[in-house]
Image (cartoon, rainbow, N blue to C red; front, side, top):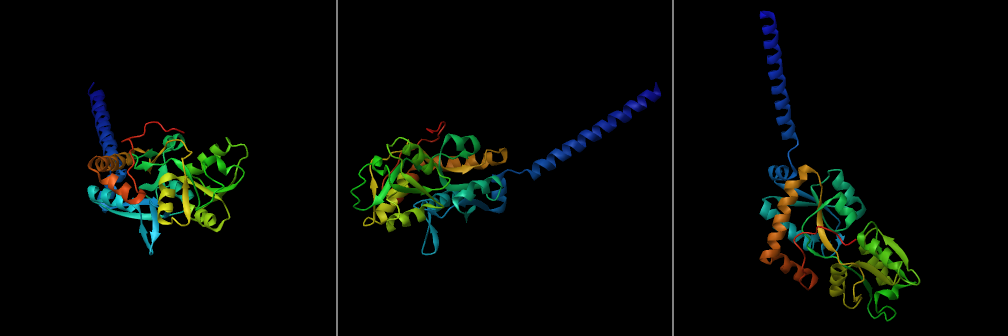
Amino acid sequence: MKTLTRRSAVTNALRVAALGAVASLALSGAALAEDLLAKAKAKGELTVGTELQFAPFDFVEDGKQSGMNKEIFAEIGKELGVKVTFLDLPWPSVLPGLEAGKFDMVAGPATITKARMERYRFTSPIANATVAILKKKGDASITKPEDIAGKKVGSAKATAQLAQLQEFSKTLPTPPTIQEYVDFSQSYADLGAGRIVAVANSLPNIAYLAKTKPDVFEVVEPPFGKPVYFGFIGSKSEDAKSLMDAVDAVLIKMKHDGRLAALQKKWFGTEMSTPDQVTEASF
């Protein structure tokens, strides 16, 4: 009996030691898996991927970054107590970069779609993203979206705007020829040069361009796309949850105190009503 008791005591001691080791590993693992918000605050920096060819959200002016995103993230940085560093990439590389962990989140912004919502987490929307047509000033051959039938039009690769243009084209008697560009700046250049007759992009983007270059471009009314919204993108992973929650809280606060409306008016020329959250995308 004494032998059994000793063996039992040794076994219990080993179990306690093993549990202690497991607990220690769990704690050290938790420290290693520190969430993105904690890491950003510890480093004092939030790293954001974007494409600086998407005015008025992100673009280069006089050799420096400009646009609505810079101003929104300045507010986010103040609220979170971190500086914001932007990494400029071609748009087709931005979302893969997020998945590879090269930055904390994506500025973009991107159209909130069903497919993207399955893969990523979106912030509270910052603007209306309904797609419309941009044409050259005075082009009487295009007075409504349907007039692009049979013509050569452009949009950017790997974008929701391109997807909506492709869907809209199927409804026309003669589908347009669609030219895909690495970024929208190239499509605008070809439109100005007469190599294409129209560009399909979200209304805020083309409205801004038509506003800044009224003698070159104009918007075709009404927009043809389904009602959709722009939002910033983050990972759905557990370590990104606190960061995305914090960014959402800032954006919703900006909506309610008027800061976001002021930025919309500055960059789009008008205020845009957006929901606090999009729970189901329209396409």
